[in-house]
Length: 324
Image (cartoon, rainbow, N blue to C red; front, top):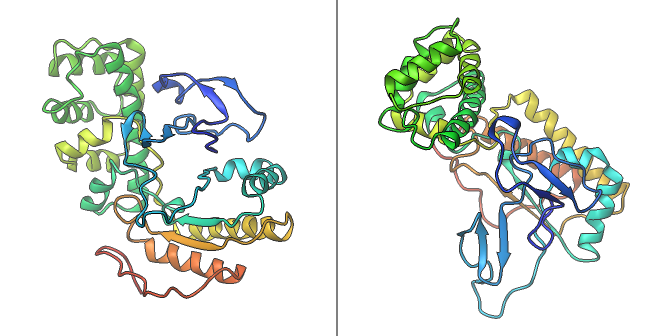
């Protein structure tokens, strides 16, 4: 999405529909950019005003505090997905040039664009040492359970089955129902854990369908998760979660190189004045693949002629990163 005066290009419903893929688009302000496929995250959750930057009403600090008094400059902060770029590259380039005008611009590349862990799942993925396929399956299942739990608790706020301390028992009982579970089995199971639980039949069938899709390996991963990890997994819907393969990373990097090169050579956009790289090793970037992602990116920037030596050596990778 682009932030334009703290607003996105579309008007959205106030609340997201958990089982219907996110926020409902209730009005279009402009014809471009095209609608993002993931309506959970297309809605801009930020408000920027003279008091600072806020996320869904929660303060995130003062956006106008500068390290040196009097040394500051206003800037335009814009975010857009690659799906929207590729939908109409010419229109995307024209809009970007309009936003930048003759000004200098900074390209900030976050390595977790190429491979990322949802912060709520990252601790479990790292503690259990999950393989990429296991991590991705965990992300898919956790998202499916999180949206139905949100729907259940929105309908029945008194439901305690998916909250600690009952959650651990709930998950283990559900997993024990096996691969041929039916919706009435789910309903009975949840009643055994919390007699006050009143789950709608479509929600019970949704959970049963998730359980039927689990492999033995999936079930073992969930059984090994600690109670606080289970709580994080189903507490609320997650952001992107994909542990990309080296091949997928190289393919995405080639696509980025082609896009950036086209913006400059074909559409006349000036090269960035500065390129910054964020490793995002706190929770997002899968550490095992991090050094490869960074090496691929630096090689891409070098081929574009945008690479430059940093005055300071790059910081060491944290434990768990596979550095050759």
